[in-house]
View 1 (cartoon, rainbow, N blue to C red):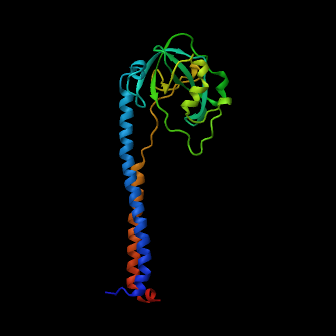
View 2: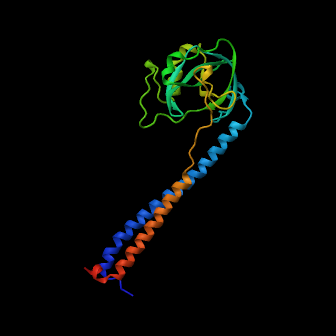
View 3: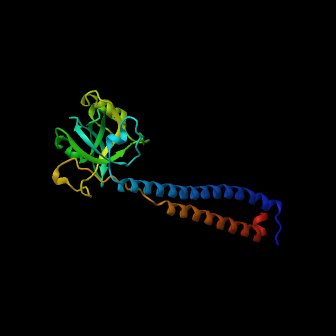
Length: 252
């Protein structure tokens, strides 16, 4: 057995320290991805359960004295649209365009924002007019609490250019259309009446499916990090073995 001389130790300990640090980081990333996978599966299950449930009356869910609703709660609402709209830049199925947002006056004296659906970018000036009088709509509650992203442009309310869901700013910009009613900081996202969203023949905007496309690649990411950790261990062991078996090189 080759002894660990001072020269060998001086060569080995920095590599060992660096390998241990790198190994700890790789393992932490792998376990973090497994935690993210568990969280993502719970989120998907909650969304699917909410979308499968029967719709509830929005007034019974978000009126005074009722608990605050969860994201993707399915609702119906009866009232009338305020004659105004705002446009939030987005994309749908790879196509740039707008989410069309209008205020909706509920029969209980409150108002709420309604996401009427998607319209292609060039159709902003040719959207269908809002219906007059009382109507019933079906959709899901969206909280839109994500805020402005790091690289998301600032909204420009004066030009009706919105790039992120600033509910407070949208409500203020629509205040003339809500007749002094209190506006709930929520959005009802209208959903397609009969599965699918391809109703362009009926004009724009068109409601889109409420269920988000949530990627679930966390297991693959975890395997990648654990695989890199295993490779690191293998490389370290090969290095130690070569250091111990090559006395000429190690003592040089």
